[in-house]
Length: 459
RNA sequence: GGCCCUGUCGUCUAGUCCGGUCUAGGACACUAGAUUCUCAUUCUAGUAACGCGGGUUCAAAUCCCGCCGGGGCUGCCA
Image (cartoon, chains in turn yellow, green):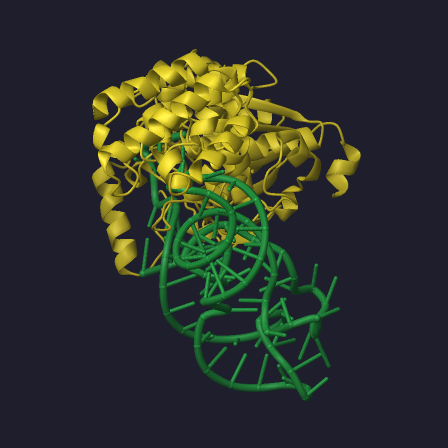
């Protein structure tokens, strides 16, 4: 904790600023999760702001996807969601102010000129940046291609104290006259974020490591605007299996693609454990809030490993109640007595359909009914004996049935000879839960029916 | 090309600040075994890492220097 927090213990305000240029990305969820963790731990505010300054690429559908995805994960804005496109007048007034004071100017260079300049700088082993040759001329006062912040080309150091990484600094000379807007009404990212963060009184800017190099530029804008700097914290990136920034070519990166297989709590738990080490693997969000300290976030990126997600999801799946299981899978026919049998075997939610035979009569392959190489009549004999037991047993529950079947097995050449055909008759599968468990779920009548069906197929 | 961030098992990491208790711990995955008709669960065991090279020190994963690797950014995108 530093001085700032002691002075303003209750005014932590953080935000995520996704741009609606694609479906809800898993990386957005990651940034959102840690901002939320930090906000809640410090009794602060968490705000969602839609950064739609790029009119060409932004659209409402993507915005909806992002908001819906976040909500599914249990993430909501503490204040009404704002959009940059609705705040154009604000940026305009800031830009005009900078233009009037001469802190910003119109650059008239063409893209071709800029490209040539960049090429030459690379060849000369120089940092690529544009130091505008006519920034102090009359031309710079008339509308041109782009508005730039006037940055002195000097060896001054621009730096900041990153909450996660410590001191980070660069030479001002490597920055150049950075672009802030295409016109009075079309601010560019770096400028819009700064204005928004100032206006919204954001105290901590917590975002991905890929923004580290934007930060010095933004600091220059803060300074030109005479505004106080927020604290900056750059989180490690979520990586694909090749260790590069997680993107579409790595497969599923859209949260929508996870909704059918994973519980939101499990995904959140997994995502959070990727950037921070908590005291336990499985934790509720509130427990994580309790422990979370921003300074202790990891510094290096972590590969998004689905195997671990699957395991975490399996842990959560086991705690599912009947209603939850039905709701989450959309399968209303799941019987109450089948819940444990199913959830114990669940890695992905969509796998529930593998257990259809618990509420729907399966079609069983007669060839599968034989235990090992057992001849037909032996299988028939075993099933017939099992049928008698099922029919006569006073109470049909798994333990009772089990002890009867164990007894029977002694005369039929071992458990396999009895359990295997019985199980296949009930499930139709070569791998499934215990037949006594299935029988107790589907009931005596249905059990007898399925045995008879199998017997008929063997005849 | 330039600038910046980062580097412990296959993966996620603990340990690094304040050198010894680290023959480097845990989890996922994997392998084997126990339970078991099959599957899953559960339990037991096992394989597996300090990027490299110097230096400091009685002692280095931990401190210093150099190198190498990985990543990000380098837009009139965000």
